[in-house]
Length: 301
Image (cartoon, rainbow, N blue to C red; front, side):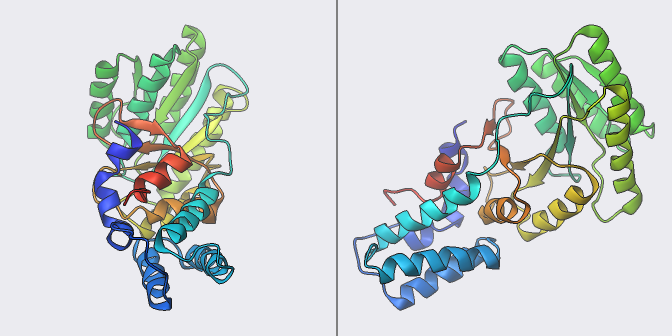
């Protein structure tokens, strides 16, 4: 599924209500106030809205954007600039196999993201190996095993209530022995408010480094795009515990407000690397900042 198709519902709940029929009418102070309120309601952070509105008011004052469509173009460029910085390609890694940890809270789409990422790599000619290290939930192990069969990728599974770090260690060692190019570990779906679970994540990071020097190469934080500002709170907690290298935003095919994507990228200065735009195995797509912004704010209204 494309970014544009995947964001159809999100687009309807974002700024399209304000810009949906962007006639070539003049911009008024009242309209600018409505724009600011709509940005805030879409879960863009206050600080980022302030920055965007400052840019918008500057172009209006300089008579560079006197109509609604031209202001919309200015908003688009400001939002693209938020998402552009950072390397969005997966980190190559310092050794073989490359080790990717997938972290996030239960219900974020973390486990399915790990499987979909494995499929992307397999389709690209790699030989990925999955690690079912979410041992706190037997259902998570079973879910990833089912997905592994579906996407035709081998898997190393832990046992319910087993040591998650040990599963990651075993998977990396297996990847070395088998010659796999990448190990993708689905870690425990810890609640970010549970200290002992965050400690477990820290342990996994250390053990991965013992299994292969320099690992993990990538720590992808999966966030549910429908949770709005709570996703930002989660992101802060996880980045304090693990060296998160990139973000994956899921469930953008639902009714997500969409603004949290910009708020997270702006606050954490981390690249959004992938978007989950559907339930199928191929519905994990690389982030394309301009395509993402244009899908939310279509030029043709």
